[in-house]
View (cartoon, rainbow, N blue to C red):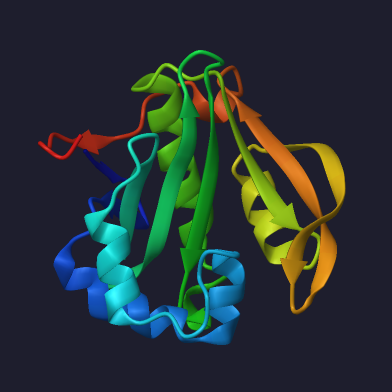
Length: 187
């Protein structure tokens, strides 16, 4: 299912995204925001493998900037747990010139609305390294609230740092209405 906001469109990742994924993740700043799964170097073969081996407990989307139609990153709901009605959320966007424009917050809002209104989940959570205040601000803007901090939890730049756990809940006013969607055969 494609999800469309005012700034971004979330759609199924495709083979045509492979060069952009590899190129963007070759930027150390972008790769750092992607987390531990984006090793360096991250090449086209790695991107292709990611697209060809989807996780059955995940929903992955390519992020398109509606301003120019460019592929700018990926976002995912992962660890989808229908018994406990929750999922993890993640994102990376690049290049850095695309940051601080609201693209990530809107992608987050669309994905979380999808989790609540289409998957029937009650909670979506994210881990944000303490070294990434930009990411924390973006998810707080999208209605996430701090639940706690895990000491020495993630490896960043060769050292263990704390990770903040933030969550959004279905009853938050920002998530009352479903994500705007375009019917697709993807999900």
